[in-house]
Amino acid sequence: MLCNVVVLCFWLLNAGGFSASFTLRQSGRMVCTFVEEQYHTGESGGAEVPLQRNVLLLLNSPDTEEERAARAREFQHGGVVTFLVKDPSLHVSRHADEDTDRLQCEMKRYSTAGIHVPWPGAGGAEADAPDNWFTCTIKHRENQFSVTAFLRQPPSPESELRFGDTDTLRVSAVFAVRSGPAVVETALRRDVRLDCGFSVDHARPDVTVEWRLQLRGERRKLFSYASRSGQAERLEGEVSVAEIPRGNASLRLAGVTLKSEGTYICSVYVPPLYSSQDIQLDIVERPRVSVSPSSSLTLQEGAEEKLACDIDGYYPLDVHVEWLREIPGERRLPHVVKHILFTSHRHNPDGTYGISAFFLLRASLQDHGVDYTCRVSHKSLRVSIRKRVRLAVEARPQTGTILLICLFTVLLMILGVMLKHLHKARQTSNKRKPY
Ligand SMILES: *[C@@H]1O[C@H](CO)[C@@H](O)[C@H](O)[C@H]1NC(C)=O
Image 1 (cartoon, protein in one colour):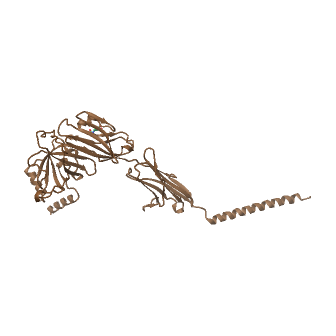
Image 2 (tube, rainbow, N blue to C red):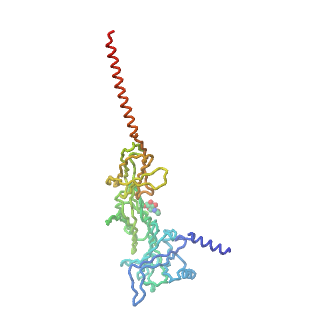
Image 3 (cartoon, rainbow, N blue to C red):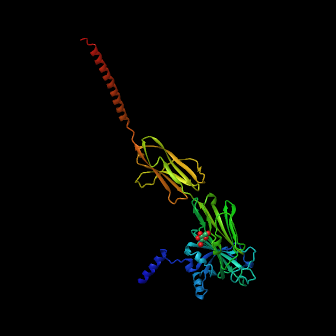
C-alpha cells in the first residue's frame, strides 16, 4: 500500500514536469545534432553516413567504466557517438549555463579551408599532420545567447573522417566565440551595446576582430583590430581595444538612427579558425495616439461628427488601427466600427510614420453613454494603446411639442395684434369725444 502511494507520487511528480532538470554546467552533458555537410557514401557497399544524427556531448567527464556502462544503458537502442570534450580553460558550459531543455546544440565538421597552421595551444605544435576540427554551437532556444566552440581532435592513426555508431571521440575545446541576444530591439536615439566575446586556450593569441553591418545585401565594415599589428580601424561604433585581450569585443552604438538598423556581424579569427556571430538590430518606436474630439462629446440626436484617431511617431510602418463601439460595464466583445477611412501614411523627418483613422458618426439615442475607442497595435507595444471618446446624445424635441410651441407662438402673436388694435381704437374714441 505504502509502496503504491510512493510510486503514485513519483508518477505524479514526473507527469507534472517536476523531473529533475539540470543546467549544462551542472550536468556537463547534452545531446547534440551532428550535421554532415557533405554526403559520404560508404565505399564498396559500406553503410552510408547519415546526414543528421544525435551525438552525446560530455564536458570534462571522467571516462570511467561506470560512465560508459550508464551511457550504454541510456542509449540501448543503437548506441550513440560520444564526444568527450576536455575543456579546462574555456569553460564553455559557463557561457551556456542554462537548463539543457532550453538549449539547442548543433555540431559540424569544420574545414580550415586549406590553411595548415598548427594550433598554437597545448599539444598543437608538435603535430605534423593536420588536426580534425569540429564546431559545436549551443544556442538558447529563445535566442538569449549563442556559443560556438571549436573542438580539436589531434591527428592520430584511428581518427578518421567517418566514425561508427558507438565510437567515442576525444576532443578538446580550444577556441570559443559567444554573443548575446540574436535580436536586439531599441528605440531611436538610444545607446545600445551588442555583446560579442571569445576565449582561446592559450595566452596572447594572434587574433583579428571585425565588426560589419549588413543591410539589404550591402555590407560595410565598422571596426577591425589585429593583435599582431596592434592596428585598429575605427569607422563606426565603439569597441574598446583595451578590452579585446580580455576576450571582450562588444560594440557600442551611441544614439541609434534608422541607418543603424540591420544585421551586425562580429567575427573573430584565430588562425586557422574563423567564427562569426550575427546580431540583428531592430528599431522600434512607440506610436503616440490621440483622438479628436478628445475624451467626451455631446451631440444632438441626428447630428454628425467626425471622430478621428491620430497615430504618430511610430516605426516600423506596420500598424493596426481599429475603432470600437463599447458599452461601459458590458462584458460583451466590442463591436468593431466598419467603414473606417485612413489618410495616407505621413513620413516624418526622423523616419517615423504617422496616419489617421476616422469615420463619420451620426448620433442616435442608442449612442448615449457609449464609448468609441481607438485601439492601436504595433510591434513596439506589448499591450495595445486605447484612447476613448465618451458620447452623450441629447434628444431632439418631439414633432408634437414643436407644433404646440408653434401654435402657442401664433396665438400669442394674434393676441398681441388684437391688443394693439384695441388700444388704438380706444385712443381714437377718446379723441372724438367733443365734450
Ligand atoms: C566589454 O567592454 C565594454 C566596453 O567596450 C563594457 O561596457 C562591458 O561591460 C564589457 N563587458 C564585459 C562582459 O566585461
